[in-house]
Length: 287
Image (tube, rainbow, N blue to C red; front, side, top):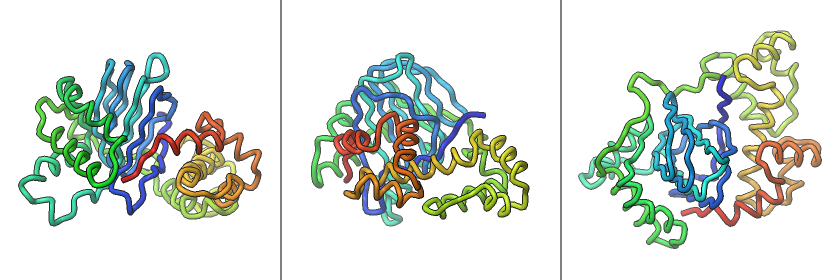
């Protein structure tokens, strides 16, 4: 089974969009999904790209719009790209009062199509790429205008390619089981507390051993691995968003041992919590 994880993005309700500017970006993040839209620009790499049921090769430059909860990942032959710029924004980007205005119709239609993933042509990439790369340097209201200009220009461009078939349903497999969904909902709500196999097994009416086998088979992970993924997702956001100490963040997200937290975090993210905070504070811009 493909290892698909739920990513917790840095986007908050008060943010219109967020730009992640990553030179020499490593392609070490597993296939993932999130409820936000994502426009991903890749430069200086070639390899394979996963978007839902689509597995295609890309070369040198790539630009794809991924809709909410559509799983995706990029893989590079050399393990990294010269540059990746990721723009994430929420489902409610366009208020109801804007959606049926003539000027926004093409954007609205494009966002609807992006639920199956959209790949843009080389011509579009060459035209819009410089604007995407410079967006990270903009401040204030001009950045908002540039963002909507980018969305408008790609919404009216020719040769858009929908990546998944219309029969494809972007459901994440692990949530097709009622019991798995119950377990994951419980973990998402209680990750700050101590969670044991016995607690969870009892929740779904199974023995400990039967549950462990069942969960591993359905998710490809042990219960501890899944809980750690959820906790690491939340600690990642806090490292960027807050000024709390690493120790405070560790314990507030359910880890009860700082050295274990550091070890698990580095294994998942490739950097220590301290290095991750320092690196991402320079790479992420919110608007």
